[in-house]
Every structure is written in structure tokens, then in C-alpha cells.
Image (cartoon, rainbow, N blue to C red):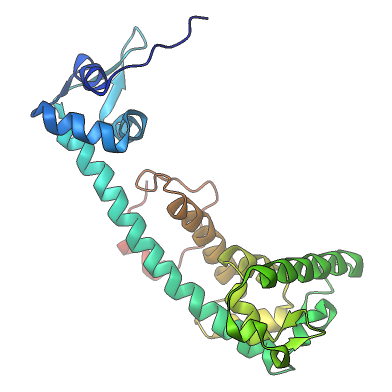
Length: 242
């Protein structure tokens, strides 16, 4: 197979034009190709194109500005989503720390105390407990937090109180822990949001996937969830359903 030849930024603009994209001001198009990248912009152009009988991708009455508009709309959407998900993350962490903290600052360290022992065997929970302790210890070594360096906030000089713990857990960590929680604890958490435990887990798992895409600059404007989150009936009129 012949090795692909590199194209200059001007030639990359020409490639879009050869496929039917109306370029407009070439200097502006070249600057955006140089700053954003051909393949990044191409990914946003795909819904505006079609593949003909010769398996060639073509554009009809599509301008380069149309492609840019989709790129920046996606960027704005990712920023808005990250802000909203951050608010949700902070709220969930605060409630989780409050629920588990009522039983003791280090109550969380023993998973048998608060996890679903009917669903998970003790050996599985022990493995998850050890995984969390290992994760906490590693993150503590990298943390610059004064609170996390204060010995009075640590158990055995390794593990923080539950209220400090949530500050070093990621959104993904929280979702995994909620999946382990006992039904009673999970219901207490879900009650804060006037939903069922299954609804809460469904929404948070979808948000975790979306957040990861946003955080890694992946396209979200065309994102389709393979597993749809549970929907409340009163939301239906506000949602676009395919």
C-alpha cells in the first residue's frame, strides 16, 4: 500500500473544495485548518455530506463556515455540559459524604458496612475495598492539599475522613461506588433528588460517559448513547425523540 503524502494547509483546503465545500475566504479557511486540523473539522462535516455511488464523499451547498459553525457549537455545548455536570458531581459527593459520615469518619473503609451484600459476595467487596484504598493512597501522595497532609484528618497516616475523601475521587469513582451501595443507602441518596435509585444510577452513568467525552475534547454534538438513560414521562415533551 502506498504511503499517504502530506498535504500543506492550502492543499487541505483544496481537498474540501474538491469535494464540493464552498470555501469563501481562503485565508480564513487556511487559518482554521492550521489551528484546528483537517480531520477534526472533517468529523464535524460528515453529517452534512453524502457518499455517492463511487464511494466518494461529496458536499452540496455546504460552506466551510457551516462546518466551522458545527465545530464551535460542539465546543460551546461541551463547556456548558462540563459546568452542569460539575454542579451535579459536587452535589452527589456532598450527599454521599453526609450519608456515610453519619456513621463515622472512617466508616467507609469497611465496605461490608455500607455496600450491597445481597448482590455482591464478600470477596468481591473486599477486592473493591482494597482497590479503593490503593487508589486513595496513590492520590494522597500526589495531592498538595493542606487538609490531606494534616495527620489528624488521616487514619493510620494513610486514609482521609469521608468528607475529605470525596474531594480526591473522580466522577467515575463516585459512580462505581454508588453501584456498590446498599439499597437503603442508595435510596437515601436518591430521595434527595426525588427519584428512584435505578433512575439515579442510570442518569449518572450516562453523565459519566458524556463527561469523559467532554473532558477529552471528543465530539458530543452528534453523540448517540448506546444505553439510553431512564426517562421521566414529564420530560417527554421537552426531548427530541428519534
